[in-house]
Length: 410
Ligand code: HEC
Ligand code: HEC
Ligand code: HEC
Ligand code: HEC
Ligand code: HEC
Ligand code: HEC
Image (tube, rainbow, N blue to C red; front, side):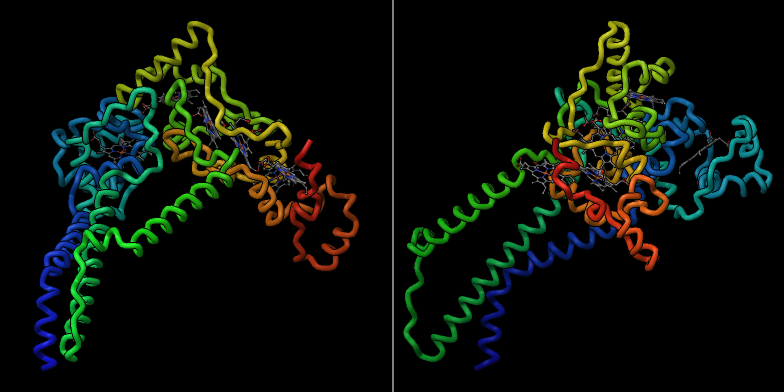
């Protein structure tokens, strides 16, 4: 009897098999994809390790190292793998080509990448031979505001998996119901007639559920926007020129202070003038892409017409708040990134922190100040006594008045 029941209930799980199989398939293909040789994987590695010295797609200009266009035609794959993994070793082995190019580039040594697998190097070579075509930026949104968003590809997978899980869930609930009904029938009770779906979806119970969901969503939206009122975390306005911080501060490693010199010495960090851009762009007329070159042309237009570039200000504290950069950067020795996020990775600049009062206060409560030998704090005699008695005693910004209203409010 029991066996019979089990076999009959298994029939109800049968529709689950395709769903389970597809989940398995998804997981497997995702694992396999990571070990494959693909131009996309190569692009990632190239951008992380190589663009500081080699021009990225279309690889047609010298930077520190040679232009890599058609390198796969100039050299054998075997040679390239050896070169990229450890070029010094290849030269030491007496390879004439390796010694020749090294001499041509002023004996300027390329680093070795000994940890790269063959597949990783082949991926880089696949990328150099066949770079994916860059999508044109959307009009009105220079540089594309897709910064930080997960790639479309990965979210499609996510939704697929969620969909499959939902189907499995519904099926399990149904199978469970059927099993229950079967046990009731087995015990010889009367079976209630099963209501059709159309009836169930419009029953009083269902309406109550819809109402509940609606109230929850409305409450959520209202609280969320109330908290954010006046706060613009993630604010990413389009700029007149698609200026990429990742390229300048990341790849080219230009110091933040080269363009934002005020941050060290004054209240405001400031935005660089056109002439600062021209220090380099007199010489650099080509971008990484055609779109980049067009953006650089806009610098010339502004320079020649003697017109400032109308950058849109992203960070805006209300007028009643006093904030001073040099106090934090020079005295407090706080990194720009602590407050502005991973700027050297941002293609388009956005507001990283909320700039709320709670944000300022939290940091003042947690951050220790450089207390000893700091004349600014000589008036805190009591704290000095404590520090003398217990050298591990830490003085936070809050203890020296960093939460006093008048410190931040005019
Ligand atoms: C610090 C600068 C630097 C980095 C980073 C760098 N290279 Fe190089 N690369 C050079 C220089 C300079 C040369 C020219 C040869 C020499 O002087 O050693 C070169 C030469 C090459 C060559 C030979 C080109 C030819 O025409 O034969 C290849 C291929 C190459 N690099 C690939 C790469 C790859 C792939 C990466 C990233 C994994 C990379 N390089 C990272 C500086 C660099
Ligand atoms: C080559 C010049 C240059 C360098 C180097 C540079 N920036 Fe900028 N920065 C700009 C320009 C131009 C803008 C205005 C356009 C924009 O917002 O993208 C800007 C805007 C900003 C803003 C937003 C200002 C606002 O409107 O509120 C922050 C924050 C910032 N930069 C931080 C940094 C940090 C941190 C670094 C170093 C990691 C850095 N920048 C390096 C040129 C530069
Ligand atoms: C210290 C030198 C230097 C300064 C200063 C500088 N740039 Fe650049 N910039 C470069 C170099 C080098 C490239 C090209 C890199 C390449 O082709 O890979 C570049 C590329 C660009 C690009 C094209 C990006 C792309 O996607 O191809 C834009 C736009 C740009 N810069 C804008 C600016 C603006 C605006 C300023 C002033 C606020 C500025 N740059 C200041 C060195 C500089
Ligand atoms: C303690 C947090 C903090 C640190 C550290 C910090 N900033 Fe800021 N930054 C801010 C705040 C807050 C604003 C908004 C100021 C306003 O609206 O008055 C801002 C504004 C800016 C602006 C917009 C122009 C301006 O001056 O208002 C730039 C550019 C900028 N910061 C660059 C930098 C750079 C570069 C560094 C590192 C050298 C840095 N910041 C370090 C908090 C910080
Ligand atoms: C990441 C940490 C951090 C954040 C965020 C931060 N601060 Fe500060 N702040 C400090 C530190 C550290 C000092 C003490 C610097 C020193 O004098 O040694 C300081 C000092 C100050 C002072 C001077 C206080 C005095 O004793 O004279 C003012 C004013 C101030 N901050 C305002 C602000 C405002 C306004 C904000 C938010 C918009 C803010 N800070 C956000 C770390 C922070
Ligand atoms: C470390 C800096 C700092 C200190 C200390 C500080 N505030 Fe603020 N306060 C801010 C900042 C930044 C804002 C604006 C951001 C916001 O609206 O949340 C603000 C906003 C406000 C507002 C306006 C709120 C709104 O929603 O517009 C009031 C009121 C206020 N603070 C009162 C106080 C009082 C009272 C104290 C003393 C107990 C105090 N603050 C101490 C930084 C500070």
